Length: 133
Image (cartoon, rainbow, N blue to C red; front, side):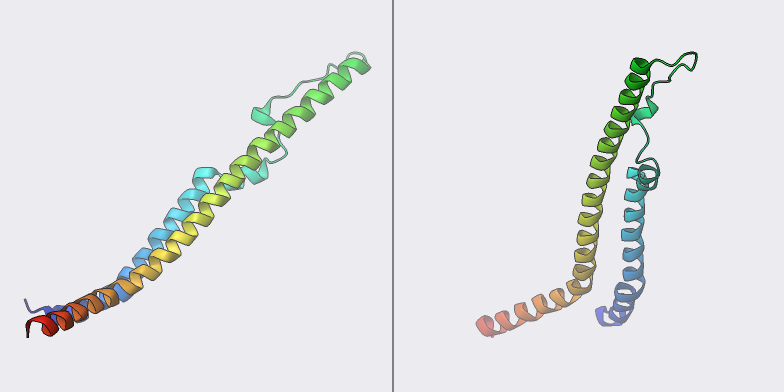
């Protein structure tokens, strides 16, 4: 098959359908990261205790020492939960930023690659004609 006959179809696919599919794949990867890190759940349960570990206060009689002990343990579990969720949210944010940057670079590279190929072929032809013709 003649290369020049296929070229318009390739250009159409590369800059229309291929670009749309690439953008969908990048968007799908970003959605995967959002679900993988459960960012929505982490934000909803940000102030929840770590692994739902809490102490319960018995309400039979009021004991200041027991009340403060339960209060301190519950506060510590919430702080630990916040710290763990904060670390996970930071890691998720970093991976999302890296994925967005790499996805953008890949989109730019996708747009430039055919032009680089043509430039390389043209440079090779010029160099070949300079030295061998």
